[in-house]
Image 1 (cartoon, rainbow, N blue to C red):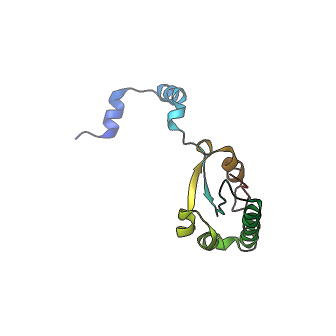
Image 2: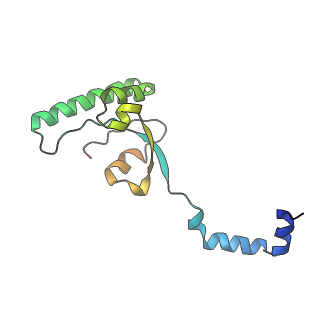
Image 3: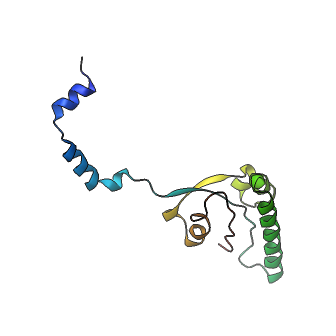
Length: 123
């Protein structure tokens, strides 16, 4: 019966060859940096008046304070307030790859570890 161990002995690959192959192909074995992120979107149309922008900022500040006081209820707050369909439906937690999202998102979420809150601002 043929076994993996028997095949390995017949192949004759040295530890040095394995190490060299890995070092020469290290990028093939790496995963991009990824973090878990959640958000609550308070949307404002691009052509919104100053009054509408101010009202949205006030709402965002209110939601931020609620989230800060009750971080364990973030998903519940996202369902209640977010205008993003994914967050509003599920209180969504999603994975963010550092190099795949714009500077504004990366700046607010990637360095922010441990369940801390960050304000992203206008994105």
